[in-house]
Length: 134
Image (tube, rainbow, N blue to C red):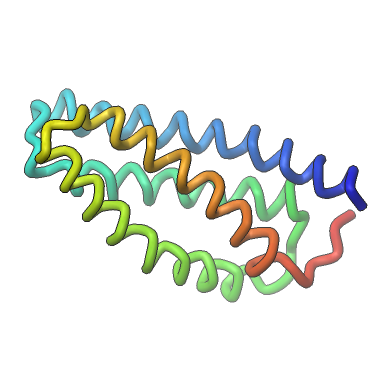
């Protein structure tokens, strides 16, 4: 059982790194290139990048980490519930930090680390807890 949980954590980390790259690149393009580092629009960049990352991460982790084929719409609704709380809180706190002079990329990186840990726990113990892993 410990090996299965460890393997899940490793797979989750690998797929989350790829989702993190998608989030970081899309955020950087939006924030630095398209918007010219306008601190007031941090939240727009954050939410857009986060949605892209969520879709990628959910798809890969559902299929390969938690090996779930059952009731995808219900799993997606559970993930949506997580992000209904996480997104506004992280966007608000990120906006506060960005307008207080923190570097937008640093704020996004810290947010991604918090998201990584909370999302894994939520996937494992809420979204896919009843799944039988192969």
